[in-house]
Structures are given as structure tokens and as C-alpha cells.
Length: 218
Image 1 (cartoon, helix red, strand yellow):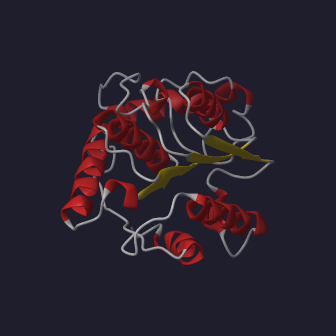
Image 2: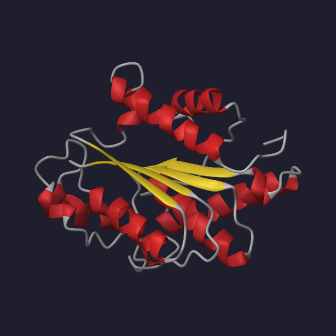
């Protein structure tokens, strides 16, 4: 919440909907699975407040994008799909098997491609990197609602989004992938500095507004 309040507020204002920004346990003090468990609890909290699953749009960036997609998969499997989900530059594969890990290893200004093993060691806590809870690329998405993905063509996580788009489409989901040229990882956070950031956020809000009508309490 401390790092993302401004960008979430921008999405919220553009979409005309309330936003709930949960605080969750972070690595390396806690393995990534703890954050996934906290995401489940956050969703249950919203349900306890009277929101319906179909009143809620999931969203996240980077690791949070992967957490959002992992939660989406679990909700679909439980028969509680939300209205939709968006993810910016999401981590979808903690096995780091995408070709872009190497292809963009020298282009990505945020993550050096030759240090992904160090990153995995810090966040996984010994967990299986192909566990669908933490790597949604390996999860199932039955009866999945619409999904919106944005990623840069120059980041090492490019193929996480490309393969997630392919997977969701193969499962019958309506998925939209936007690939931006030469943008840094999660460039949305540079809203006010990069015009591409505001443009990407505006398209995200348009996606949210394109979903089936939500209740007045959404």
C-alpha cells in the first residue's frame, strides 16, 4: 500500500470504482506462498463485507500480478470467479523458463537476466517453482473471466505474459495482451513522468469499465 497508493488511486479514479489495497507478507522474510495465502484472506475479507465475487476485479503488478493471477486460478477452480483481472508485467513462472529471460537479460533495467536464480532463492523459500499457487502459468483457469495483460517487449518477464495469454486463450478465456516497446518493468509507476504510463493506466481502466456491469458497491 505504501508504494502503490498513487497508481492505484489513478486506476480507481479513471475506472470510477473503489480500490482495496491489501498489505501482504513479503519475501525474503516470508516465502512467496505466504503472500498468496494473504491474497486469499483479502478476498475472503471483501466477501465478508458484503461484496460478491462478481463485484470484484483483481489486479497487480510484477510479483503482485502473479499473485493476482494465482488467486484468479484458485477462485475459478472454486466456482467463485471475479469480474475480471488485470496484470502489469506479472511474474507467472518462478521457474524462469521463458526465452525472454536470456533474450532481454541485458536490456531489462530492473532485473538482470543472469541473477534470476538469486531472486528465486530469495522468494521461494524452498517451494517448487512450478507450484501453481506461486507460478500461475502452471495453474488451471476453468470458466475464467476476462483478463488484461500489459508487458514491455524489453523486460525479462515478457514471455511470462505472452505464454499466459496463450494459456488462457487455449482454455477458452477472453484475454487481451498489450506489449509496449522499450518500456521499463512496470512503467505504470512512472505516471506523471512517462506519457506511456498514463496511456497504459487509461487502457487498464477502460478494460475494467468494459466488464459486465458491476453493482453500485463495487
